[in-house]
Length: 155
Picture 1 (spheres, rainbow, N blue to C red):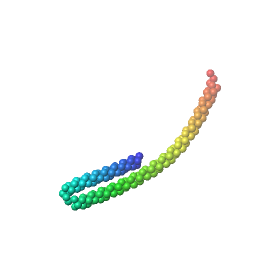
Picture 2 (cartoon, rainbow, N blue to C red; picture 1 turned 135 degrees about the vertical axis):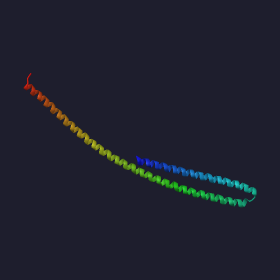
Picture 3 (cartoon, rainbow, N blue to C red; picture 1 turned 30 degrees about the vertical axis):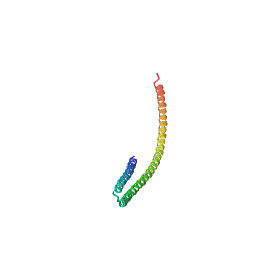
Picture 4 (cartoon, rainbow, N blue to C red; picture 1 turned 120 degrees about the vertical axis):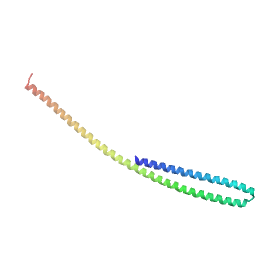
């Protein structure tokens, strides 16, 4: 029981880590989108300043560095997710092996228990036959003693 509960808890932790990693990816994506919006706002300001070419180059480098950072973050998170999935698969295989072994042991136990129970039933039947035999002997002895008493002390 405890083994199964630990496995369930571990699976729950992995699921929470997976959800947390996904939320972090979404959060980083939103941050990048907001940065891109800021950059677009800067571009429109630069159009007004007439420094369009240098602004575009600056903006391009900022966007590129933002995408590189996001790409690296996503790779790290994907690696984490793959690691978690691998561990989950390992836990799943361990749990399957445990259940299989437990089922086999339980089957063996039940088979032995059934055999023991049959032996007990046979012993009880044998004892019951012996008791019935003894009761018949006691009954015959009582009848014989009554006859003897009638013969010894006639009424």
